[in-house]
Length: 554
Image (cartoon, rainbow, N blue to C red; front, side, top):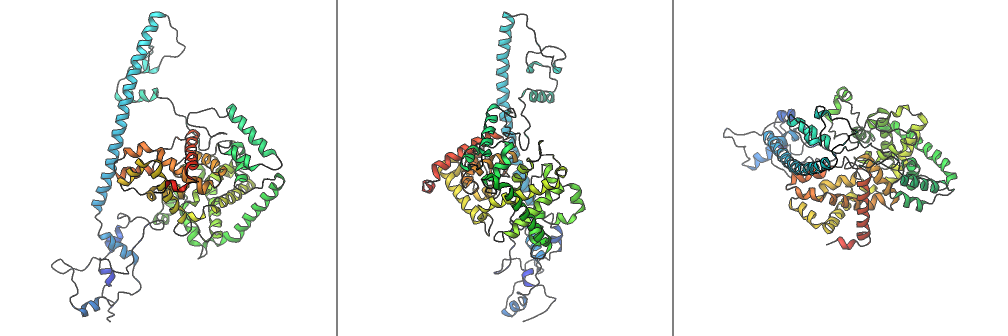
């Protein structure tokens, strides 16, 4: 056959699909193709040769076909050129126009919904104002002299105003501001709330009931041999902050129930962990470990803007939105990220069946936050961990590693090749929802929404991307108390969580709207109350279906 090196290789010239050709797969390891980022590849890519008539020249004889395919299996095909050829079929203007239309349509629907809600609220306000005026007039007739202890509103120019709606309003902007001031104030909820995980109604930090529950925990923990069954019963409804660290260590199996053995066990396990660090961590840049360490460094990036500017190579690697709680200052501290890197790297090389998989980094954060609370009294969001003693930091790191390892031991098939555990759970979720709320199930089928498209993340990250961290910690109180909480009960929590948004799901009338909703569910203001209701519904579903799986199979 011909070996003319000047001829363009057949695979590179022919844009048609050819048996055996390599196709790029975009998923966990590959970013979606971005024409803007790869513009240089498009320019560099060679276009198919065409005849003066504008049509590609085709082989007309066997000899000609033989000559142009002589290098068909030559090594050295450049993946970048193949990627550039694929990009030639993309019309950037059409892609951008389609994306803008989807966003615009969704924005219009959201705006219309907000307008409808505003109109309904305004009507209620008018009725309330009319009712207040009637009561005021009746009060004036019966008690003409009324004293007020409050100060005049600044909106009333020093005049007493019977209701906020009667204050002088000059512009629509003032009206909007005035309206917002009349709404009840929603408290700011800390990442991890005090003692009882403050809920959205802004209850006091410690109620009489919560103090009583704390005493019960202390009594159970004070015995020479902790009754783990009794501890699980107490923990199901939430664990007070003061005793959460020791309770999690006991329920996860990290510490023994016998109090005399705990201290020696802690010392031994902590020394063992740092023995792994000395033995393995220096090998992170070795050829057979560097891919694992590189992926961990991507998932726990130094996400300050200055660091990104100083490391331009980072922008060449596809980095998702920072995965480790990017909005919480605690996790942006260099010392914290180094702790996470060590924990994840040691776990990955000690579990070669799965290795490190994206999402495992999220599972460290609840343990880390809870064990930090053993050493501080203030809120943790902005706490500078470098102010802790070195011994305390080492204890937090080792305890987080071992408890995360215990958790992953029960769900490791979620992270082995092809992630079969997640696939089974997503299928079970689909079957369960089809039985408990067929309307929602059919609605998603109608708009071709696959459960795997949104529920994969729910299983892979245990709902950590869908809930605030304070809610995850409360959720894990119950998971620790439940038999097989992370591996089995989580399925019913996901089913209850999906059906919780029934109205919002049914309001969406297209694929894009459904996917945007399911991937951005409005849980930012969730607290203890909402999680407790979710868990109660999940327990009801488990009671009905767990021991009778055929009930939800069609």
